[in-house]
Structures are given as structure tokens and as C-alpha cells.
Image (tube, rainbow, N blue to C red):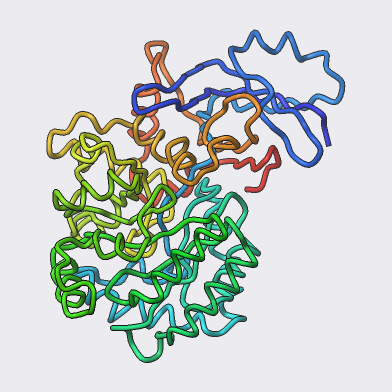
Length: 432
């Protein structure tokens, strides 16, 4: 292995919603450490002069390609890849008719491993190198993900102890046992994962809170995705002891000790004022999934559009996720494009591609707690990067927004995003 790798390309280095370094004739310098490459330097092409005489130097030329950090998916169900094209006119019916029967197949360990291997390939081909992931109720759905997925993943088995089909339900004892076993095995990479409050009883959720504090991992679930869901969950919990006076969906999780800076709640489309206050108070993050909640004609569930401006006004943390399989494609590039286009349709000009890239890389890394190691090309971080397909940019293109706009404009169909990634580096090694 070479000590140094010099990569030529058009570098995009996200810093914030409004700031992304764009170096049109750029260079990334990777340096080999004990077992991985890190970012040693980056800058304009003249930087080559400082390194071209280094011993054991490999030069990789992607001069005509945009190079971005490895993408991070804040919310996805790897066991749902086979339901992405199923009818999605109603969230709860979609779960009952398609999703849950599909997840039941993962009881078979051999099937589970085969599917995980295939899904891992899809993640890499789409440039995804980490994220927060849901398995099925089965412990080996977590084992398989950690075995095959390449990148910084945080995975949990869904907890389902009530209001679930007989073929996909756990006793409280079974759920607690798995929480203890898997958190002890995977430590901070294990995610306490109540599927959502309607299917997970409060005793198990409270046990999950204790487990999370012990292993210092993450918590993930779903929140306020549809109005029907909100009505349903409130009707259930108002009949349960200690929750008779509950007034918001978030408060159910809060009373179970599940909200906090290590928690990621999926969707948050219909947050009430009380929800907003609780999420802000606890510093809980939201995973916005624009492709999943998009109109049915655009292959989504038609749930609605997350109001990120209102969220930011209330100082809520949020990032982007694909929500496979309600989301139709694994590609975070597709998610970024959907985020921008859906918001522009309603006149929201604050939804830029620069913002979308930041919310798919560095911001997600911050929420996941891995921003010291990945998320952008700051010096010392691991060399996780994605090379996009060659793109001819005119001399007038000088900003990240202009460059990204040209890239997305060149994509003629959503299916093309999978082919838009030409090479993927994880810790400096090509894995695509």
C-alpha cells in the first residue's frame, strides 16, 4: 500500500447550511496511518508541488468529477428493501399489508444474511458510508448488518410488544433480553429502537432508556409522521396508567426517558407546539425523509413535507434520511434532490443543494456523534469520499451551489442516481 494518495478532482467540502468550500481544480492528499488513510491536506492544484516528490505516492485523476464526503443516512430500514415499490397510499395500511409480512421473512438467518450482503452492495454503490439503521425484531438482523455493512453504522432491532401481528411480536421478556444482549455486544453502535409508541409498551421503552444510558448508544423511533398515526397513538396511551393526561406524541417518549441529544426521531411532519418545545428542551434530533413522505405520484407515502424552517426557528437539530423502504431509492443523492425540489415547489428558496449536502454529511455526522472522524474533508478525518460521474463545468461556475445545481440538472431520471457514483473510498480504500 502506498504511504500517500493524491486525488485530483473538483472538491466540495461542506461546513454549514450556507458554506461549502468548492475547489474546482482541487487536490485531496491522503496519508496512510496504522490501518487507514486520513485527510492530510487539500487545496488547489498547485499543492501537488509539495507532494509530487514523496516516496510511495499514488496519483488518482478524477479531475472532471465532483468529489464529496461519504454520505450518511440518518434513518433507514435495511430489512424493507423489497417493499420500496409496494402501494403506499396509507402509512398504517402499508405497514400491515406489505412491510410487516416482509420483515417476518428475516426470521430465517440464512435469508437475512443473504439480504444484508446484497443491501450492503447497494449502500456502497450509492455512496452511503454510514447512518442510523433499523433491523427487524430478530437479533440476527442486527448481526448481519454489522457483519456486511461497510462504514459508520448504528443499528437496532425494532421492539414490537403490542398492537402488532402475531407473527411479528415479542413478549416484554424477549424484548428486554435482546436489548441487554445486543447492547452488551455492540456497545455505542447499538441503537435502542422502539418501532414507534403504538407498538412498544412503556415498560420496554423505559428499559430501553436504561440500556441506552449504560451503553451510551443512540435511540431511534418514529414521531408525528401522519395525523392518523398521532390520533391512534394518543388514543392508545390515554387508556394506559400514567398516561391518561398525555397531550402530545413526544410526551409519551419523554415520560419513558427516550428523548435527548442521543435520540433521532423519524419524520416529525406534524409537530405540535408542545412537541416542538419538548424536542428543543431535550435536544432531540429529527430525521427528515423527503422521498419517503413525498406525494404518492412520486413514489412516496404522501404524508406531507417537514417544515425545516419552523424546526430551525425552534432550534431543532435535523438531518436527511432515505427511510428505505417507504423511500423508493437507497440513494442519498435522490433524497437531496427531492428535498430541494419539493421545497422549491412551495417557494422555499432556503432549500439549497449546499444545505442538502451538509444535511447528508457533516450535520448527520454531528447527530450521530462521529463528526470528529468523518462528515467532511477537514484535516485528520478519515478518508471517506465519493467520486461522482464526470461533469463538464463552464468557467462561470465558481460556487458549490452552482456546481451541485449543474450535477443534479444532468441527472435525467431518479434511477440514474445509482450510476452517478463512480468510485467510493472508505478510509482511503476503494470499495465500490
